Image (cartoon, rainbow, N blue to C red):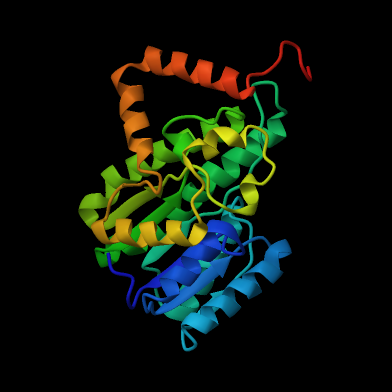
Length: 272
């Protein structure tokens, strides 16, 4: 997959990974970029557009704010992109959030994680896969996390929803790959974005180093050129994943010890 002359949609584009992907993709001479984030993030979207204009002054950029956890708004985003550019070649379902919790966390926070980390990918696929299949080509890039392959020590809500996102992407790849629809999942550990700042237990993810969002975007472009399903900016994640599959019980024991060392295990009856 070469991004030149492609129409690319990026969700969560106001900051962090989404903004870095937008500016990096702009240098690949796409046909157009469609950027979205929550309406409250309009200033960030404008900042991303300005950064793009420095890199590619003549590149057509459409800003269309919306909530990716709402299917009607995802459909409206896709309709706006098609009205402007006639098609969507690449859909980067990147938006994410942090609402840490455990099994006692209120249902509303579990549901929010589910909507943004899983259903947003479902809604995107519903909206764009039929047209991609009809053309015989297209690309879904879903930002997930290494937590989807391993776990998130401080957060069940995050880990569970990210695991589900991996399962969905696998299924989409199997079902639609022969029709020309390629699927990749971006699974970094710690990225230097506002999301990890001050997060409880984030030292676990930072153990293997914090990658800059711009450097991550370079890895994404390389991974998409190879059409690799797992895009791993932290290559050691693959080794950890293989260890997990090789001896699940040993891996669980090691994770328990690591969590205890970092002090992220829950305390008995704490906050109950």
